[in-house]
Length: 289
Length: 280
Image (cartoon, rainbow over all chains, first blue to last red; front, side, top):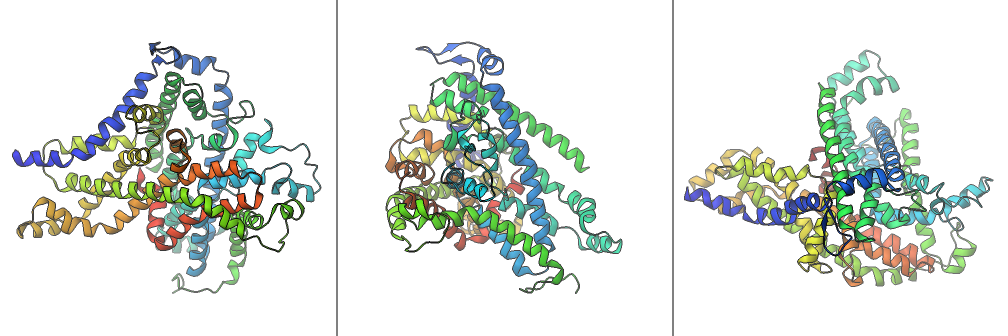
């Protein structure tokens, strides 16, 4: 018994950090979501702030719409292109070139996200930027294309950032899946005359769904609360054209000092992520069987 | 022999097209940086008049100027990410070891309590964390850029290390026990040396996380001289918005540190970056 106590003592550092600085904040987030901080002292308001977020805040509908568009696009294109690139690299017989492209795509995704965003915001500059100058060469009248500056094109601009959207790590994960396909299976496919696109859809794709499932869930739970581009580039504007729920939460807390309302939004986003992840776990596992 | 891959730089006839497509894609990925690099060597006159051509003289001094401002942010990022990575590695490997080799009541419940943290959405933490660190008086200190990342980072680390130590053969530890090693000696003399690769991988994962985060430092730090690179480059961006060459040189300078670290530890980077695959 005395010996067991030592083990609990050994785990103290972990729990001393986790309980007050990780689990308590979660509890605080939920508690604060029921309180309004707009007065001098926090006031209990029940579910009112959730109601305001869902039905009254004029920013919510555009924000939710934006995050759905961005997440759907990011997931489909991000995974689709990574799969194509992985197939292309996999098809190379020479290890030198395989390694060359693996490293090339990986290094380019090591550039800090903020720097990538800033570089793209310069490319979007209506007067000096590369994109409008390039379009001009093609004979397109660019005097009205303001990219990040116009509510019509701001969201599109954020989506374009990072073109051609090749994530080095994603490519490597899918490539590892392709390399794990048993050789008998590849030989059998050859014997059956399975080639090209048909082979990719009938054999390769189903065999890397394990990797894709994990990428899908990780990316989804990272994208739903995202607002870094809003913080760095657009501030959610012009108007609400690039806002997201995460950005609404951030603004409520740090621009308007409404910590209660912000907590309510945070809890709501958290629940959405949790539900989607749990459904994803269940549903995607069924697919596997 | 047919399928065996040999180390060869030769391109098979059939693959010329594939290599060409890959080169084109890589070119598109790198293009923004090539444009940025070209612009970074120009003065304002060159920027306004000959933006898209390579135009000597090259103003290399733009880089000296940008570096003279950015080095402090890079140093800060190295300090924050370095200490955090070390802290996460120490605490996770120790607790992971206790969870793996310790024998005590409620071990699995305690482990589950730790690991369930992986399921909780991080977005909910931002605001209460801000309030707590504010109450503790840690806002705008170096602590606020280290402690929260250690607290959160150890959760995945403990999972990683417990799985690793569980997968080791019992013989390692049994032999040490017979030799009279105590629990701490087993950790220090056997577990720790064996887990060097996985420790490096975890440190890289942590480093990348701290390095890339812009949201937390932008709410928790206000003094410019404490900024990590992620927020430092933002204030640089505002301060030098009209000195175009310097601005673009700054973008290039801030892209370089991680790539240099990559060159020295590429194997662990690959493991760290692709860790998403075993994260869930």
